[in-house]
Amino acid sequence: MLEQAKAEYFELKRQVEESVEFPTNFSELLNRSRERFPNQPALNFFDRNEQLSFEELHESVHRLADSLNAIGVEKNTHVAVMLSNRIEFPVTWLALAVLGAVMIPVNPKYTSSELDYLLNDSDTEFAIVEDDLVALVRGMEKRPQALIDERIISVGGAVDGHSQWQDLCIQGDPTFMPSVTVASDDLLNIQYTSGTTGFPKGCMQTQRYWILLGCVAGYGEPDIKSILADTPFFYMDPQWMLVMGLYNGATVHLPEKSSVRRFMGWVEDHKIELAYFPLPLLMEPVGEHDATCALKKVLGYGLNAELTRLVEDRFSVIARDAYGMTEIGPGVTVPANMSTDAALNSCGMVMPFREVKVVDENGKTVPPGVKGELWVKGDGVIKGYYNKPEANESSFVGDWFRTGDVFVADEDGFYTIVGRIKDMIRRSSENVAALEVETALYFLPGIGDVAVVPVPDDRRGEEVKAYLLLAEGVTKDDLPPAVVIEHCQSRLAPFKVPRYLEYVDDLPYTPSEKVAKHQLISAKADLRVGSWDQQEQRWL
Image 1 (cartoon, rainbow, N blue to C red):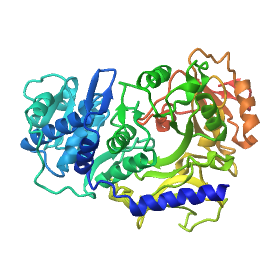
Image 2: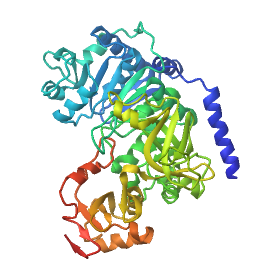
Image 3: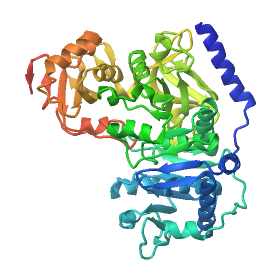
Image 4: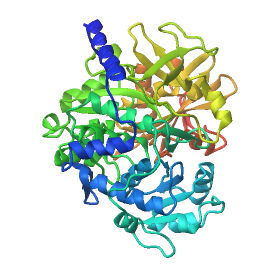
C-alpha cells in the first residue's frame, strides 16, 4: 500500500516538473488571474474592511507600477517596504514585481539601529513606509545615500515633503506595462532571515522562486478557494499564499495579527479551507462546529503522528507537516496520500523541483538511518545572500545549499529533522537536539511555549536548560518542576532530560515567530541563575 502511494506521489512530482507550464513572471501571473477570475475576491483584509477583486487588484497594481516608474523606480531598484498588515502591502509587492524592482520587506516594529543595518546592507534606494514611521526612517543615523527624503513614500496619511502612496495609486495608468523584459531569474525579494544566531542575512529570491513556491502549492490543491494568511505580510507565508491565490483564484484573508482565540471564528466567518494550524488551539475546549467547519487542509510546524491525528480527528481535516527555509522555499513535505506513523513522524518526501541528500561532515551521502546535514538544490533556490560572500562560500557547495539542519532519512525516502547543527547540546559524550526536548515538552498540558538551550558545565561540557512559558491562566504552582521533569522522563532518555528549568513571563521572538535563543543566552552571565536545578533539587 505504501509502495503504491509512493508511486502515485512521484508520478505527480514528475508531471509537475515536466508537463506543467507555470507563469514566467508575475506579470503573466496577474494577467492570468484577471482573465480567469476577474470578479472573484482576491484579497480580504477583514479587520480593516479592505477588499479587492482580481480585476481591481490588477488595476491597482498597474496604476501603482506606472506612478512608481515615473518617480524613478525601475528594474533592479531596491525598495524597502515597512508596513503593517494592510492592503497596500501586497499591492506594492506586486507592483514592484511588474517593474522588475526588488522588495526588501521590513518589520514595522524595527528600531532605528535595526533599520541602520538592514537598509544599508540591502542598498535601499526607495522606502514605502507607514505614515507614522516616516520620522523613524528620516532619523536614521546611517541612512543610505540614495534614500533621500523625496524617495520616502508615506502610506496612510500625508507627510510634508513626501509622496503619498494613495495619490500614486490613483494617478497611475491601469494599462501600464514596463518597457523592459522581466525574466523568471530576475531578483524579486531580498528577504532577510530571522537572525536567531546573529545579524540577519538577505536571501536573494527570484521571480521563479516565488512562482514555484506558490503555484506548485496551488497546482496540488486546486479545490482550495479560501486561504487564511494570519502572519505579518513581511514574512514569507502570506506572500506565497497570495501567489497560490492568484494561481487558483482563491481568496486570501488576512487579519491585522494572528490570534489563537479568534482562529475558529475566522474559519467560520470566511469559510477558510486552508490555514496554518495553531497548535495551542488543541488546549482549548472542543467547539460545537470544530468537526463541521470549512477547513479542508491545515499546515503545521513540528507535527508528528500523534499531533496530526489529534488535529485530524477533531477538525475532520487533512493535517500535514513540511520542511522549508527562506533560502530554499519548499524542501520536503508529507504527501496527503500517506498516513503511516513513519510518514507522519517525518517532514516528508522530496518536493517537486528539489533534490535532497543527507551528508556527513565531508559532504559524503550517508546511508538511511544515519544522521547528517541536509543539503538541497533545485530550480528557484536563492541566488545567495546579498552582499555576504563569506556566507555564500560556507553555505553553498556547487549548486547544493547546506541547510545547517541535522536530518535522518529512512529506506522509504522519508526525511526527519533531528535539530540544527548550531542548536545541538553536547552533554558528556551525547548530542542532544534542542528540538527533540522542545517537542517532548509541547505535549505537556499547560505549556504555552518552550525554548531549550545549552548551559556551560565544567563536568559535562554542557547541560540542558528549558525556558518554560506557561499557557494563559497556568502558574508554576499548577505545573511545578517535579511534574515537568516526570513528563520529560517519560518521553526522553535520561541524558536528554533538562537539568535546569526556568519559568518566564515571555520569550523573545524573531519576525518569523521563532524564539530568538541568542537573546536568551546573552541575557545573563550565568544561565543557571533563576532556574530550578533538578540535580541539586533547589532554586538557584
